[in-house]
Image (cartoon, rainbow, N blue to C red):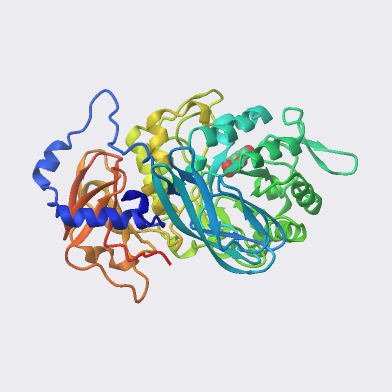
Length: 529
Ligand code: GLA
């Protein structure tokens, strides 16, 4: 039976919601729940989260992918399921082809919106999904990017071997199968310029072509880092005066993503730059990127100056994401500042193609700017809260740790299909805070494309607290004009546990200090189109 089920982006929820209706669960009893929420003492406690994937095929990652016609396209359709497993497609735009592992390559011939029907089959069943491919100018990043960046993992100690290993680990550990597709070099790869002015990597990186080809062979994409100033933040060669040459070099190497970090550009502008001066270096690089024959995702890094969210996504910059605050670090204060405080008012500015970026995920084992490798200082609950909040914010999900050393808990945190689907929701509406309650509780919500609403209850306080959604009315402010409000009794699903909780009119539950609950509320109206 399962094998015959139609798996679209939200089909899984449809099936499970039906099960929930049959179960007709009872809302949590608030008193017993509160009693169960004793503060942990001593050893860290771990949130209860689901683990593993079914043997039958499932598609993951974005349901929509953009590209420029005539330029190289590479997308490995993320999926899980027992091997051997065969993926097939119908409706691919002319110029693209797919192999039976789901790797789509080629160059799209004409602009347009294409509905590609994907099927995956193995001996445990089959899955289907519609992937929308949008071909046109400036159509990249239709969902927030997911991937890995070298900075917090290795700082300037990164090498070609470590980068190759990070790409290999994305595949080996099952992260690529969930949509993590960018392998991004941060600062420290630059070795100066040749006599003709061309940027060269340091000896630690050797042949960039070879490294990037390896990443592409894995079905992944490659990112690079530079600054509009003469020097990067770590003092390496920036793109100042060489923007066009650098864009050409990146394109020739096969780069897919550029993080462009303000850094020493500050010495090129007055002490209090005007808006035009803030925009200029990014507009210059955008012109350079547009003049080469390669799609490169453009990530603006200037720490939120001059309200970058108001101009970063528009002409003449067309940035695909922009940092909204300073550098994050692995402390509760930093997560709180970059995640809650800096993003609270920014929901109107994110959307398909252009995202607010509160910086990277502080998970796993890395240097985290300390100079030596160590585990994150965030508690397990804080780690779960960061992933929850970033998904509610439709934020880029960028790991920055030693992927070879991912422990099972961290792996479960970043591979939960239902949680990641909130981040990757194709409507791309960033969540907003809809209620603040005693003791540091905040309720955030974002509408999803299937008519349901994702709601998260966060506890920012020092003690366990009950958080509640007194009625679904509380979520109405996040709905789009004309959307059907959630009324009366609605199916509720706990996304971290991947468990239906039954039909409820309200929700109340204990939330541990710095912990989070993530729910999906309502009946999915999604049918395969
Ligand atoms: C800045 C950026 C960081 C990182 C470093 C590299 O601080 O904000 O994300 O790229 O530069 O030097």
